[in-house]
Image (cartoon, rainbow, N blue to C red; front, side, top):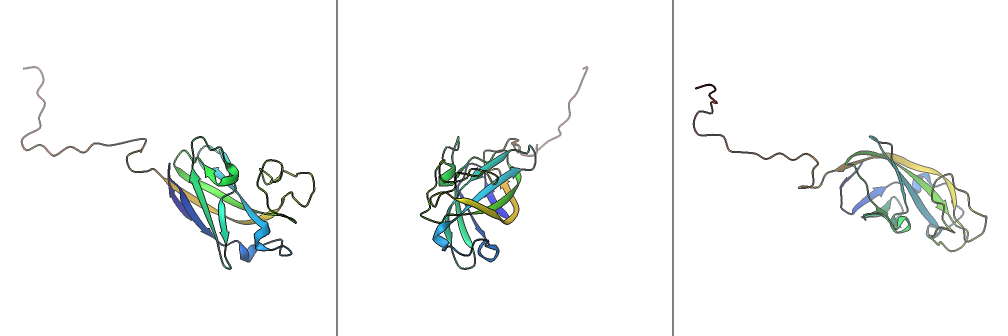
Length: 159
């Protein structure tokens, strides 16, 4: 499970190499498209995180942005707080990796014009849950704690 806070950058360490689909290309020609689905309202966000693929895991960095304008640079705006599902899709290139609207699929079902410079979604490599907690001081419901009264706390009516 990934744990993060609202309005904050976060990192995820996910196992992607053991489920890798396209093993005919180098790690440098692989990127991961992350689909984030909110459990409460069903909203969906897609993002290509900044990533470092290691032998046993992939380190994915997500940055918070409002509004998220750079899906190809790992920028997300996950609201409301709560539980999100994530699905990670492998995208591979035959040539040099280029993340842009013309060269990288923006959803797991999008198919672009075939070319060595265009990424192809290979399939789902991992999925799980993300818990997004509210950052201290930004909670939707905030309680103020008052000290206990030193004397009686009666309210008298009609006198």
